Length: 216
Picture (cartoon, rainbow, N blue to C red):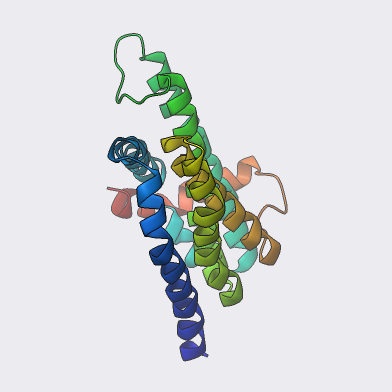
């Protein structure tokens, strides 16, 4: 069972990386260095924010006492992440008259909205990877790298050909995370109930050790 899981996950990664490797010479000629730079500054800023909003609670999903408990933790954790993302991106927009954290060829407001979409979908797909891994749904995880590679081929390349700039790279990443999330939700959906106040209290109470020790 262990080696079957390893081979399944490894095969998906190898095939996905192979497709990406083949597509790279094409993509790198459709986008300029400046466009890659703009893509990099937004995604690297988003990565910092994702680290801030994570609260270290992702690992709590894996060690939950049962699957229903894992669902509750998942829902509360993603709610926290989404609310914190709204708060931080909203603060960046509010500060824009006096401080812009980066510059791109599109408006700062549009860049923040793109970054928010990237954060929301990336945070969701990351949590779903943990949840689906807990359920040992290796078949679902096998296809995630293929979805990402497919979005590079079907979105990044056409958008680069039509000179959409770094927006093409952003949309490819956002759509890849969104489709991977939809794919995993088909196999294991933790959104089977609303978040209740008791769930929030439970996660705060039981998850304090993750927040205190893993989050820093």
